Length: 114
Image (cartoon, rainbow, N blue to C red; front, side):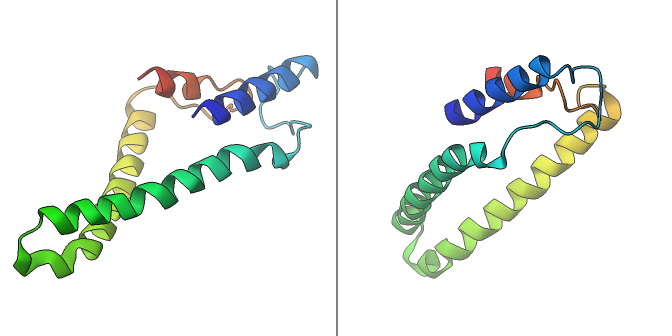
């Protein structure tokens, strides 16, 4: 999250310096290569946490259910993706929290604070 926060700070600085604050849909002159470090950190996190979760499930499940630990991880991951999409859809429909104007999007900071 810290790496993504630094990239977001840089993106907002570029938007303000180029006068794109109130021009939704405009192209931000910033390379997509800025996303490599935070995405690499996320990948390392996933690579380290997934085996630990599988080991925990294997350890805690009864012997008769140990063969289902990997499928349970995939099931929980899929449910969490669908649930997060549904929550965002409801938030967008009910409140004005997520807008179409992403140039000065401070939702990242709101989610970081939560």
